[in-house]
Image (cartoon, rainbow, N blue to C red; front, side):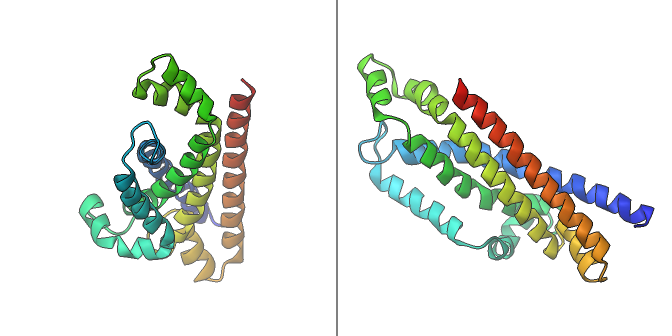
Length: 217
């Protein structure tokens, strides 16, 4: 590879890290409260609101049902409104975050539901307020599962960020399409694939390690 191509790959790698990192941060900030709401607002929950729970759950399922490439195109007007553009790294963050948030919320919801109901009943019996139960019982007990779910979400987002390169979002996917596929450069394609595999393996290993240490406490 030429030095110019090496520089492009380095910049594309950094762009991918930025896209995924920003989108993952948004997914955590929005997904955890959404998961807590879905668990606590169901019938018999500590903040029962079953009708609203069904509405929010339907919306979440609707976004999860749409393939990312379709969502990417459908959100173009919203992306332009938020980011001021429909191409580049910042434009990719919007659909990535919108796609990842409901996905992560459902995974975090599963972790929250696995908590022993006896712990919640014990906290209620000693007079804990409902917000204290969420903060000191639900979230700490579900944290290892949430970390594991977050790892799965980030891995999925890495693949989605590469897919976004097909529509000019930048990053490794853009390099693979423009220089690997369209110019029939198998070396560039192989290098991009190797980088993506390494990145996914690193994220998975880090997430598994953190989750395992939390469970061991």
